[in-house]
Amino acid sequence: MKTPQVKPDWATGIYTGYSVAKPQDMNTFIPACGGTELPFKTRAGVTVQYLWNPGTGEHAYINCDSDIMLTNAEFNLLNK
Image (cartoon, rainbow, N blue to C red; front, side, top):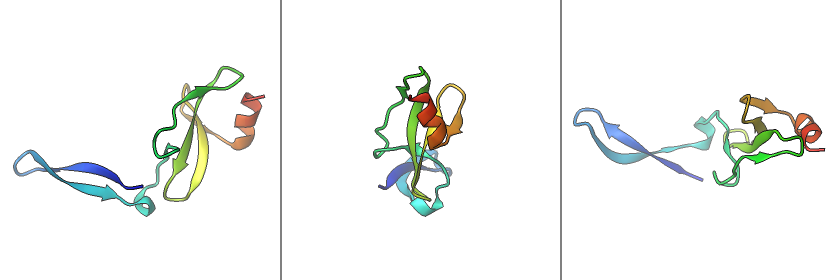
């Protein structure tokens, strides 16, 4: 999935054109399902969000309250 980002023309201060972020250049996690994944509460009451790293193809969960990435084992403990 290509994510267009507005690119400013610093000489004029006008936003023109688009630059496209390439997955191999990205080293960040984004919400999974094409960016539509929303945070949800586990059975333990912790708010988490399912994420995807387009550069590596990895999926992970993040604890929205503490901004700490969770392993699958940690997520499974919260969701028992």
